[in-house]
Length: 127
Image 1 (cartoon, rainbow, N blue to C red):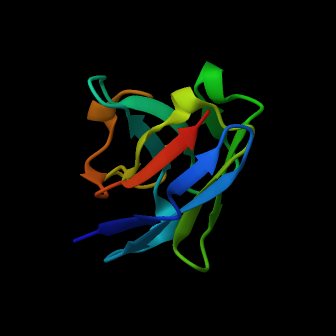
Image 2 (image 1 turned 60 degrees about the horizontal axis):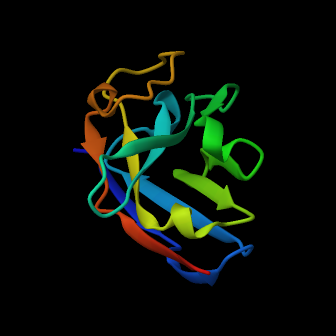
């Protein structure tokens, strides 16, 4: 059974940076698309970024393009989210997610495209 554990969240001032990590265990990591979502209080969970199994394709939500960068290290079974130029509206719990089917080349932006989720890490951006 695959498990995902996020880390790296915290409190940062607007304009600052954070790097989130998501460590996967329980199955072969390098066969599966990975993604980051976030959920702010009172709002629905929304897609942030995704990366295919090989790392050859990425996808970002429009509001994150140019500020966030997703990457993965298959040797370490870890996916990262580098967040720069953070804004107060980036405050949310950030979740890592993965799919059950191996070697897919699509990166879904809907939550129902993903089968396994981590517990999340809180990111708070102060103004």
